[in-house]
Structures are given as structure tokens and as C-alpha cells.
Image (cartoon, rainbow, N blue to C red; front, side, top):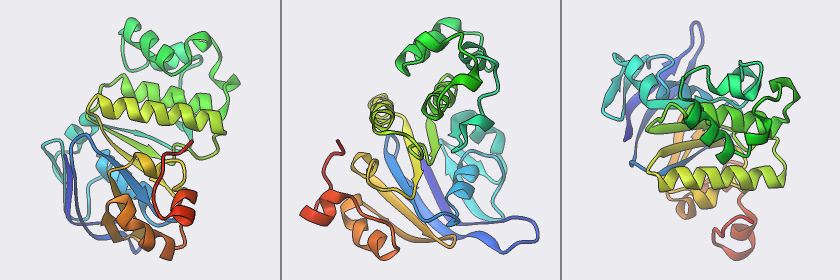
Length: 238
């Protein structure tokens, strides 16, 4: 579903943000894109979303290639940014969800699924951080993407909101959607994941199953889940 070969990217007049990445993610999988802030996670998500082409190497997503077909990537993948305010552009929840579609029934169904039905007419600026995040995810899902890219989706959420978002991620996987979740906080997401793709200073330092990747992640300074630290295994987050 998503593969990269010798993938590199550099912003103008800057050293490479990503260097020599090679990996393959299976269809319907959930991947934890792990790394400290500034490791290149958001840049890689932008490449997967077709926002810009690589400066070297090639990326394949859902049968399309970058460089060369970024528009097709944008039609098959949806990126939800960490700062939901940058993506919630409508005056109200309902208006925001209908910006990219005229399917009112689908928009209302997704609003209900996200727990936003009662907020349909609520001004966007009155929503909590978690509610805005769910609104941005709902707008992304309305496009029925093959791939959902989430940049630090659990950052700043309280425990109930984390559990709600985890349920949405699990529902997406049941529906066959491929998902990549960027995070520096492993605790609330790692048990959901099939793969871990870890970046450090723009380089791929680990690509493995969660259990196999944890020693390397700990060596990078990322805090492992409590269940692994105390019992040596990854248990479901509660």
C-alpha cells in the first residue's frame, strides 16, 4: 500500500530533512511513526499526502508514484495536522464538514460517529481541542481515503478523548483503511499498531513490530509503555 525506496527530502537552502528511507507498509495496517520532535515525522507524512515530491528516491502509495503523481496521492490519502485550527475552516461544525462535499447525509452520519451531532451548529471557535481534532478527522474521512495520516493525533487530549480517538482508529482498521500515526508518546497508541517506523534526525533507525522495536525506541529516549517496562510486553491501553 505504501512503500519508499531511498527516499530523501530537503527544504530549500537547508540540509536534508529525510535521508535514504526504505520501507513497505501493508494495506489495512496501522503504523506508529515514532520519533522525537524534529526527527522528520511531519515531513514524511507530507510526502505520503502528496503535498510535495521527494528530492531523491521514490514513494508509492495505493498504486501511485511520487515524484510525478502527487495529485493522485492527494486523492487517495488524507492528512490530519496536529494543529486542528489550521484545518477547521468552516464557521460551524456542519459548515466545516460540508466544505468538501455536498453529501449532507454522510456528513451528519460522520458527525454522529465522532460524537459531534449535538454540535452541528456550534461555532468552530467554541469547540475544545479534542472536538476540533475529531472535526478535522471527520472531514478527512468524508473523502473516503484509502490512507489516513494522523500527525500527533493524541497530543493534548484528556483520557476520555484519547479513548474515543482510539476507537475511531480501530473502526477505520476494521473497514480496511491504512493508517499512519505520528507520535512521540508511545503509551496510548502502540498496542494498536502493526508496524513501528522510527526516525532520528531524518534517518530510519528502526522498522519492525512494536514488541521488537521497543528496545530501540527506549534507546532513542522515547518512553516505552508501562506494560512493557513492568511486564516486558505490550498490553492494551486502558
